[in-house]
Image 1 (cartoon, helix red, strand yellow):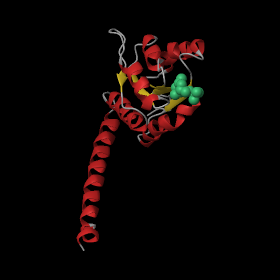
Image 2 (cartoon, helix red, strand yellow; image 1 turned 120 degrees about the horizontal axis):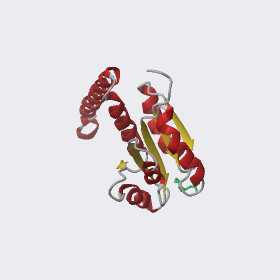
Image 3 (cartoon, protein in one colour; image 1 turned 180 degrees about the horizontal axis):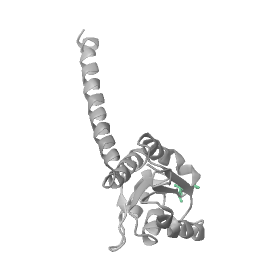
Image 4 (tube, protein in one colour; image 1 turned 180 degrees about the vertical axis):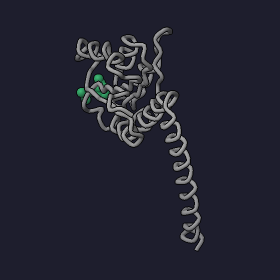
Length: 171
Ligand code: RP5
C-alpha cells in the first residue's frame, strides 16, 4: 500500500485524542496510512470546511470523526464530502449520550455511520474503515480474516484459562 493517507481522522478537541488513538493503533496494525487533525465544527469551522473539501482529491477514502458534547463534527464533515463518514461519539458530558444522539440523528440525505461511544466505537470505526478499503484490496481482506481468527483464538484461550480458576473457587 502506498504511503498516501487513505483514512482522514478528525477530532473536535485534543481532549478527544485518547479515543481516536484506539483507531490509530488499529489502522497502523493493518498498515493503513492515515492522517489526523484537531478541527472543530464550532471553534474552527472555516479550517474544518477547508480540510473536508480537499480530502477526497488528496487520496482520502474514508473519514472518521470523533467529537463530544453537541457533536456536529461528523455531520458537518458528511455535508462537505461524498466520502463515507464514520462518527465516533466521545464521552465529554452526559455519559456521551449527547454526542451519540447528535452524531447518529442525521437528517435524511447526509448519512453518518455512527459507532459506539468512546474507544470501543473508535476501534470498530477503524475496522469498518479497513473493511471499506478492503473492498478493493485483497491484502486487507486477508488481514481482516486473520484478525478475526486471532481474536477468536484469544477468546477461546481465555476460556481455557478460566477453567483453571475453578479450583480457586471450589477448592
Ligand atoms: C467537543 O467538545 C470536543 O470534541 C470535545 O469532546 C468536547 C470538549 O472539548 P474541550 O473543552 O475538551 O476542548 O467539541
